[in-house]
Amino acid sequence: MADAKEQATGLCDIHCHILPGIDDGADSLETSLAMCRLAVADGIRTIVATPHFNDRFQPDDATVDAALELLRAAAAREGLPLEILPGADVAPHMRLKELTANGRLTIARQGKYMLLEPPRQSMPDWLDEVIFDVRVNGIGVILTHPERNLEVQRNPNTIVRLVQSGVMVQITADSIVGTFGPEAERCAISLLKMNAAHFIATDAHSADHRAPCIWDALQKASKYAGDYAMTMACENPRAVVNGELITVPEPQPLRSWFGGIINSA
Image 1 (cartoon, rainbow, N blue to C red):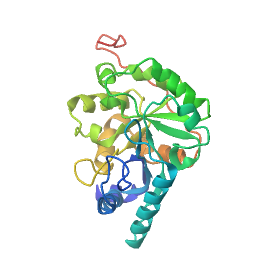
Image 2 (image 1 turned 90 degrees about the horizontal axis):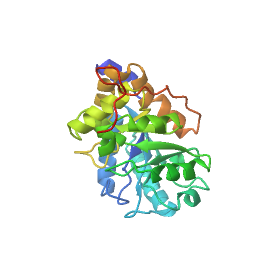
Image 3 (image 1 turned 180 degrees about the vertical axis):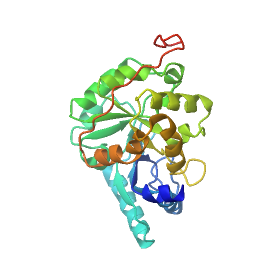
């Protein structure tokens, strides 16, 4: 297993709250550096730093850039082989069309992909309008951790229509290994089986209870997604960082024991 992990170095984490003092993630440069060390030990070589952009946190580019350069310099002094890029974990906002017009809030600020965090309880109809407003600007939407959404947990097939429309899905490593509880774990596994997940990321917030580690989740995901699990942690996120086109498999709705498509409860 150690040899396999060595070969997997080059993992790319597109969702990580690693910048010091920006949001509810790393609270200090020391915490950020501890997260960097853990990520490198886990085989991660690229991290997209994605502070929240929501009702509570709305950091401007200058604030993000200052924290980013501070962390990059500290990681370089330690000789850590880690690329750290800018991004954002974006909640639905009435001004997203305007805010994303110049590539702001997108991954690596290349104007091609953006993380969109759905509400926790449901997948409301107005979410389609928000997604449309982002895509009008030529930006691909990556829906973050829907396996932790209560409506999706009740009916994973909720995601199928969105994926068929071109939305991509990121699931959280901690969900796959059960840290977020059995409901999130079951839903994450269902999305893997359904070909309805395209990225595995950490959504890390600290160096302990929500750490930037992917490897264990990647091993478990491979039981359900085969070789595509590695694609979700390497090739797909790397393509996103580079602003390249991604082709995803056709999602397969979850079916009951009797062969029918499972409907919402």
